[in-house]
Amino acid sequence: MAQYNVKSLKADEFISDSEIRATLEYAEQNKNNVALIDEILEKARPKKDGNGLSCKGLSHREASVLLACEIPEKVEEMYRLAEEIKLAFYGNRIVMFAPLYLSNYCVNGCVYCPYHLKNKHIARKKLTQEELRQEVIALQDMGHKRLALEAGEDPVHNPIEYILECIDTIYSIKHKNGAIRRVNVNIAATTVENYRKLKEAGIGTYILFQETYHKESYLKLHPTGPKHDYDYHTEAMDRAMEGGIDDVGLGVLFGLELYKYEFAGLLMHAEHLEAVHGVGPHTISVPRLKRADDIDPDQFDNGIPDEIFKKIIACIRIAVPYTGMIISTRESEKVRGEALNMGISQISGASRTSVGGYTEEERPHDSEQFDVSDQRTLDEVVRWLMEMGHIPSFCTACYREGRTGDRFMSLCKSGQILNCCHPNALMTLTEYLVDYATPETQRVGFALIEKELEKIPGEKVKAIARQNIEDIKASNRRDFRF
Image (cartoon, rainbow, N blue to C red):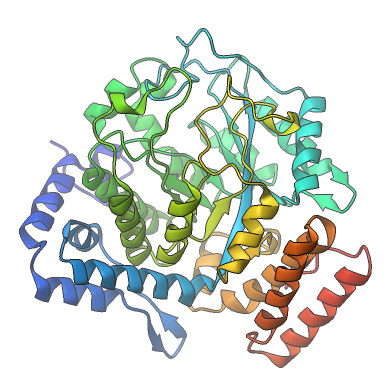
């Protein structure tokens, strides 16, 4: 059995099954140990020091104790702490994005995904560059500035050259006042050379969901195709970082395996990246298994109820305080609203999970990767966020100013990122309101911006932000950033 080694580059050693099982046993033994739980919560609490705010985060063992704890008042304390941490480092900003599906051709046999090779009745499609152009214009006309590219794994239909051409096309499209300023990429595990090409193409974050860290389950769930190789898939982030991509995004598909096992594995992966590369994951996503063509989630017996799901989100936020957390339209409006108060910092809006879905008037279902629970328009989601006191942010400034990887994390860890992000969020929200919003959303938004401007601590920054906002309202000048 592989020995646990956080700095190893071998999947079986930095995600050690024996270490996860020992962690779960330790958590079960201590789930009612109030003194230990209080000690863990106190360790995780943000504290002021000479450099501003500091937050130690938690180890996978400490966080697993919190997740196992079922004492109601302690669970409530976790929720409050998760919100405190999120507000301390990310403020009340919520970053907006949309997924863009390029192709659903796939050679893998993943049993939980409708794109699997044996599904013969799903409509297979791959966007041409002109079709991609129309999709991007449709997204720009909604107001989106940040996309996450999705594609099945198929070396013939979806080679790296196709992905690179699509990225180039997306960045080249300027429609009215619209522009996609950040392209994140969620494609299959690949080589260091290909990751280098993605970096040179100007991607933001490279995202790859592990699906499950339980190796035995992983092999059964991925019976055929290149994704069957657990080690190659699990070690992908190390190759991505070797290729120069310093912003990477982790995630598991909750519902495939027992959630406590996945939770520990996810945090061990984050610890591994920090230990080896000096920077942990830029984002962690928390997708749950959902119904889709040819896929019935009831076939899997590890589904998690909403209360457990919210607890997972809160415990991740407490354990990795500086990492962005993403929730998609897989989840309902109700669940997303509650999750925003437990650590989520990025959400998608008006998502279509089918290839070519944004140019279709009616939401297509025959080629969706999963059912979309939250089907509201972007305008409705933006207004909903603002009415709850959140700032919808379309900002991409850090990525374009080179504040990525360890540079972003050092700014975030010291609390200094707020000096850039808060005014940038308000300026990009102004762009959205002027160019795309309904009158009611404008009314709510401009009132929120006026209130939030007063929270900017530096008078000089506040004055510049206010002037830039007035310039956006009065002209076609866009893309101001700190």
